[in-house]
Length: 249
Image (cartoon, rainbow, N blue to C red; front, side, top):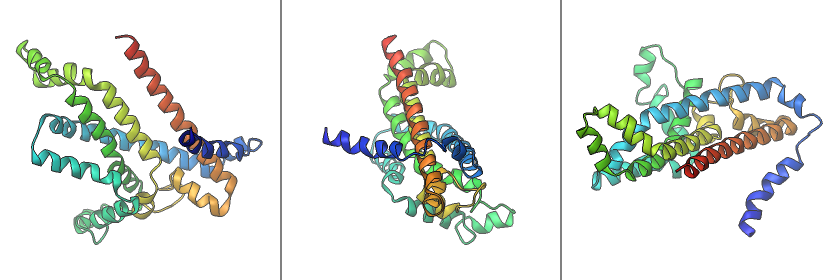
């Protein structure tokens, strides 16, 4: 019970301090609308990239054993425990003007730092481990004999992966994708260092909340409440979907 109180009390305080009378006015403000649109757009793009790029890696990690596999898994999981500011500095040292890829990007006329692309890259970097960890666990639970049986029946490699592997592992994949999306939506530290805090361009909801504490506390509380509401709704929807699937078995 004490842990439950500790988890619920801050959320309750957030709701009690929300200016309900001016809620719609704050929601309609340009700062909130721009931050919300940018967060949903970049967060969804980051989650999609994580799924597309992380699924093949997750499958390989689930089917491989040995020291190399453990080492790669450790590298993949490292962003989960790194301070976000470290992630931002690391990304800056890769894609910045003086970074590893900076001269090549500058020569090609491509700018990443302080753009929406930088927001997406920061979100992918910090959110990918959440999806990959869940996907590896989901793929690892699948009996390889089922995949081999489908292959013997004449299914192609892609057919086996699509109709057998993904079909059986989709609850874990969905849960991981939602966690990655939620992590992207709440990303702050890496974003502010790597992408900056420019309204309408790189200012996501967490960055707008940070700025709101200095300029307009009501806006900050409204954004915080909105983030909680969206995240809660998505988690409830996913749990309901997975629950119905479990009852249908």
